[in-house]
Image (cartoon, rainbow, N blue to C red; front, side, top):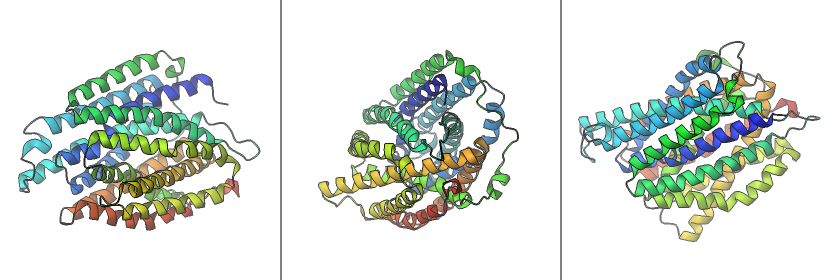
Length: 415
């Protein structure tokens, strides 16, 4: 069983970062969009984030085996604050980044400013994500209960973990949306820095923070990760999963923003209401998923996830309010159900395939491939003049087909 101190440390770390993510990183695609970043620029930013994430993993591996956990955790908070700071620099100071030229100017200088903004913010976004998400996943993996008689409780544990994260994330989203609408970016930066500092002071008091996060007997690199193969379909799954994570967190968030008439507060409220709408069902499912046939549950989750992308393809701002709400609730539930089933499978496989090494294989290959994908997509979008909503719908239709690759992912230990 995981120690109580380790579990408490993980949840305190998660609560603070979930609140911080809700304040700005959640709004990053729509905030930059409203200031003039195009869909091509957003794709470039995502691509740079992915490549930066992969490269930052080399440093993460060195520091995570040499530093005590509290120093590594402190660095994640510093990186989050730096991300918010540089977003402010590139969006609030005239003559820098997006505001270097008047919005709507399509000249060479405007394109240069757009690309510069995407690259710099993308680098900070990728490095922060690498240190936070890799540290978080490693901590979560370490506190999983061992399987008993071939049965694991990963689904229940991940479900509890996700519900906890959601509470703090939604609180941050409500506050962040209100501050962005009120023009309170400086206040948002001050709150982010304050939460980071207070969290560091609090977490530094824990004895668990004095321990090393892990001890890797050997290092993992990009080439080794791209060549990694097993009998469980990990390689094709790793290749697409990063792409889908960003389609969900950035492109779909942008679609929701368009559907609520580009209002930050309304987007925040809509996201929270959608979360409440499926919370009860999600709670019931996470308690029962470990007792169900894992293969059938996973296949059903993939099919429903593919269906969610078909539903996104059909959505637009001409739909009636009730029909739109029902569709959004269904999309939210199908996506969350898939993530619950997928993460149960992923962490179960990780425990049998080398734990932290397996996490790194996935992170390296997923982030590098998504980086290439979105850089190529962004380059193509610079020459496409279609309406952004139509482009997004086309991407979602392709995603519905691509998501079926998840069916290749197996957990051989389950038979």
